[in-house]
Length: 115
Length: 114
Image (cartoon, rainbow over all chains, first blue to last red; front, side, top):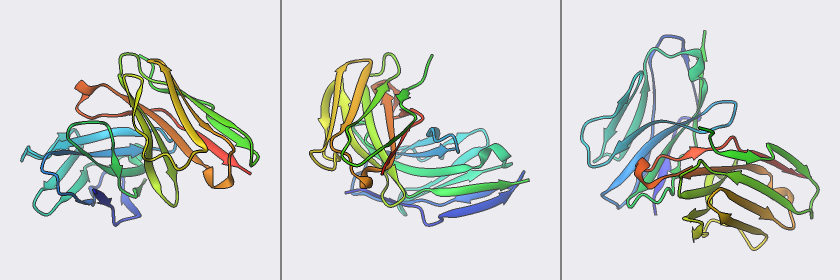
């Protein structure tokens, strides 16, 4: 069975600064995807970034980037130039191939961006 | 294009009552998922459908829960009878296989069972 662990329940960062959210996972699979989803106060889950396990290059989406360490089973999210709109709960998630859509979520990290 | 639409957004009911949650997936998506979010258990998959057929319902907590997808544009999650421990936010999500696993979530239905 797969598990996803986020060890930081809450974090805060000053606006315009950089913050890193941690995630570790456990799996015996070799082919899988990893995701970071954002859940703002409106509740709707939104995909932030995804990483394919077979790709060594770390994924980047504008101010969001990941540090994917496959051997260590670590998948952290870095948010650069933090904005007030980044305030939300962030979930790390795992999906094995074939891509059924069955996501295994971590417990979430609440991020507060302070002005 | 409209996103995943869920109703109701909020539901307050009394223990023992029947609850029906509804979901309209994104047009063209062929997979639909029901997730539940609670403080204690986080986000967990209840059931998912592919091409309107239930594929994995191993997350459905017990027989009081049932889900249907009569056509590609509509799904229901029913709880009968409801209990206070069913209080949670229920999310519906949809995806298309060619979307490399990305799920599109609705805004969720917050259920409170008194």
